[in-house]
Every structure is written in structure tokens, then in C-alpha cells.
Image (cartoon, rainbow, N blue to C red; front, side):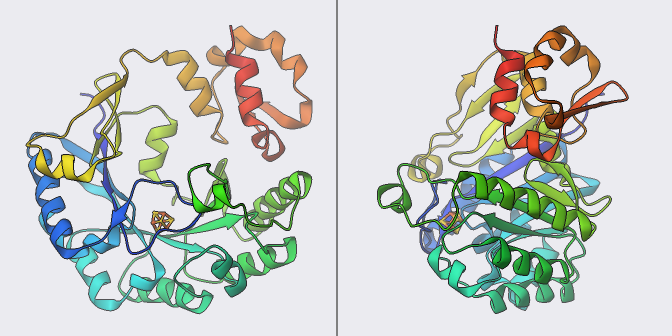
Length: 352
Ligand code: SF4
């Protein structure tokens, strides 16, 4: 029997738009949320298969909390499945957390981003550091044992010292996982049009990333992917599916799928999604090159790639400084320094 797939549901609502974000989202209204939940359920009814992970991403999926139980009731979810919801700290209040628990949600990914008020305000976030800490504690009290925190690196006003202070405070909270992303200035965002002043240059940013990796490791959060760190056993099972090239189904505008060997995406248009009996799915890649994808995705992980994938390219390894990769038990993997150059290294290994 094939391994059960993962299910991703994109919830495209936000209360306000953060100036750095280019994810697909639209302003929230109760009416759209209700219509959207109905459209998700309509689409889910087409699938009679068990899913072993469910991930509500966004947008701000916690805005859909009142409808999540009804949605999860329309999914065949395997026993012991990981069910994640991304949450904005301002919204982690007892009533909402209880709605999530009732819907079977067992993993919360909280958008902490920073525990420094100056940095949060420069990022245009709606919450303060105290609210973010409070959100984690409220989630723990509500019964969540698997809490992840998002952290942003190299943001305006951030220094190595302020990041280290954020990490110190963060790891003292009851969390089991950290996702730490470097701020990327996307062209079609307010930051892209009017770039903020950054405190760090490229070399300092690289050092900042390396110091975050080592601070998190010292606190018991082992790196398992370029941007992801977990206590033992708390790696994101859903996201591991992406990097291990396992299949997943995406529902909702802007959601991507890898299903029956094909990759496809749903148009970024909520009105179209709500108005169509079945979501429009445009194939983005009908026959992806499996070997190339396995190299590209596998080298994001600290477990790396097996010998049969890198041996054919062994000669090219001589162009890569030794401090950027390791070979252990036949598996090639990048070091944290190598992760900083992963695009270049992957291109070198996969180009014809
Ligand atoms: S960062 Fe999150 S909350 Fe902010 S606009 Fe993007 S999806 Fe919405």
C-alpha cells in the first residue's frame, strides 16, 4: 500500500498585510470565511483516502478556528496524524485554542518572529514580544505539547546581540520546534518598493545565521533542515514530506500539490475558488525529474542524500570547499556553512 499523503489547506485571510509578505492573502470577513470553509469541504469530499498529516497554512489560518472542526470532520485522518495550524500570537486566546483542540489540532506553529518590540514594530507585526510569550504559554495551558515558533533573521534593527537575546527567551518557553527564516525582500511588497534599512551586510547576515544555528543547538534544538530546528522527535512530519519528495494534496487558492506524480497549483483567486464546484488545478510540472528533485530537496535536510544520488556527480565535489559538506555512512549532506550556499551547490551538482 502507498504511504498516506499529507494534506495542505491554504487559508488566505489576514487582518492586515505585513510589509514583507508576498503570500497570497485577502482581508478577512466572517462572510468570506464561511463561504471559504464551505468550498474547502466541497473539495475535500472528492477524496476518500486517509491523510497522515494535515497542515493549515496561510494567510492566518487561526482566523478559521470556528470552522476547523467541520472541516476536519470531512477528512479521513489517520490515527496519530499530525494536525498543524499556523497561529498569529494575538489570536491565541483560550476560546480559540479550545476550538482548535476540539477540531483535533495537535500542533501549533506560532508566528513569534522576534521577542524584541522594536524589531516587531519595524516588521509591521501586530503583536508585542509579551503577547508572543503569552501566546506560547496559553497554548501550552490549552494542552498543546507540540508548539513551534517562527523566527525571522536579518530583519531591520536586528543585531547579533538582539537575536541572541530573543533566542534565549524563546528557548525558555515550552516550545519543541523553531523555524528560522532570513528576511527576504520580495519585489511586489511594500518592503520591495521601499526597502527598509538593514543593520547587517551579507557577511554579517551569514554570521547571524550561523550563530542562531549554534545557539539553538546549544538549547537542544537540532537543525534538521536549512531553516528548521527541533527537539528530538518534534520535527515537522508534514514539512518533511515536502523535502523527502512524498506526495501531498493542496486545497485552497495558491495551494500546491504533488499528487499521482504530478505537481499542480490552484490559482491565487479566492472568488474563483469559492465560486467553483471544484478547484481549478493547473499542472505546473507533469513529469518532474525525480533524481534532480531528490537532490534539490534532500540537500535541504541535514540527513542529506544517499550515495546513488551524489556518486554520479562525485567529480564535481572537488569544486566545493570541504567545510561546506560532509559524507557520513554514504550520505552527502551540507553543513550550516554549506546551507548558506545551498543554491549554488545544488546547481553545481544538478546542471547538465
Ligand atoms: S506574514 Fe502572515 S500575517 Fe503577515 S501578511 Fe503574510 S501571511 Fe498574513
